[in-house]
Image (cartoon, rainbow, N blue to C red; front, side, top):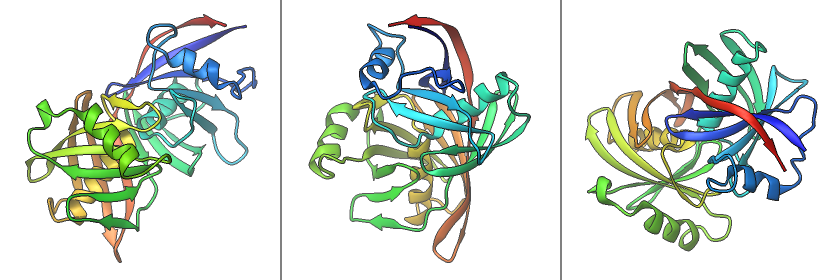
Length: 257
């Protein structure tokens, strides 16, 4: 079988995206998904996005990690919006459906602003915070982030602290009153990625919750680029959470299997 694909990236978090409105892609075959995402034997990506029809919104984003597992992906959602705009399915505003429910978004040029879900439960421990921003995230401040072995230490926490179900692991270093540097070990990729949208969202909220910043607009530097997260806080919950940053097409082609 041969199918057309598009490669997108959002601050270095990269995805194979396929227009699957005709339901031609065999998504129950995880071997094909892992092969497409393989950087030596496939196209190469952190995940696969299938853009599909939806009765509740403009489209459905069916997201798969590179190992074939499913989750919500913030940067993937932003890239899906950019792709839907490229296809002419949407204008500058959209509503789409993902595994964690309905999202709204806007697009201006290559900047996509995605509304994330409210966050009300944050577990605070002595050295880390844990919260769910569509996917589970561990947030931990460290020193010397640039030289830190994210893959090794992230894997230890992903399996050792959270078991087989696991969690994404975010290591954070503060740079000023409203800015943080972040590196993330992603569950499902089982490695460090250049950026993680749900991860930086979790970091921004955790840093506000723990008093590291008083701002409701937080700037995050990832190895793949810059993202901005804004939110409101009321009655202990974080609402009107928005993830903003670039989403760009890299190339497109056809792949066979």
